[in-house]
Length: 155
Image 1 (tube, helix red, strand yellow):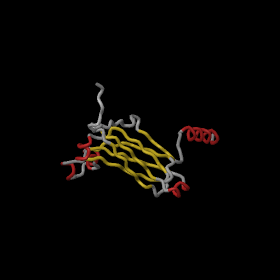
Image 2 (image 1 turned 135 degrees about the vertical axis):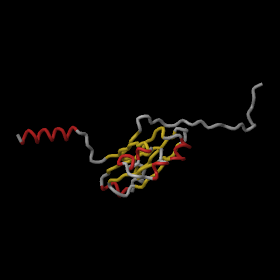
Image 3 (image 1 turned 90 degrees about the horizontal axis):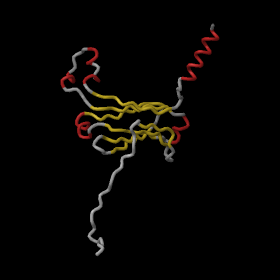
Image 4 (image 1 turned 120 degrees about the horizontal axis):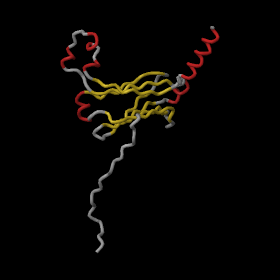
C-alpha cells in the first residue's frame, strides 16, 4: 500500500510542472472589495472613499549564482491611453515579490493597464526569465515629421 501511495505521489509531483526557479506575474483589480474591512465588517474610514485601480504582483525565484550578476526585474507596461513605461527593480534576494500599483488619479489619467511584460536580466544584458501578458504586443508609434521647407517638387 505504501509503495502505491509513494508512486502516485511521485507521479502527481512530477506532472505538476513546478519549477524551482521562475518569474510569475499576477494582475489584481483594486476597489472597495480589496479592503480587508469589506470582508470582516470592521469599521474603516477608507470605505467612504476606497482606492481603485490595478496592481501587478511580480514574484520570482532565482539560483544563488545569479545574484553575483546583479539581476534586475524589468517591467514594461502599456497603458490604455497608449503610453508606455519601463520600471526597473534591482533583485537583491533569491526570491521575492515586487508590486506595481496604478491607483486613483494616476489610474484615471492612464485609463488602466492594457498589457505588460517582465524579464529578469543580468547586468551584461542576458535575459534569465521572461513573462508576457497574453495580449502583449509591441506598441507601434509613428513619428510625425515636420516639413523642413527644403522639399523639392516635381514640376
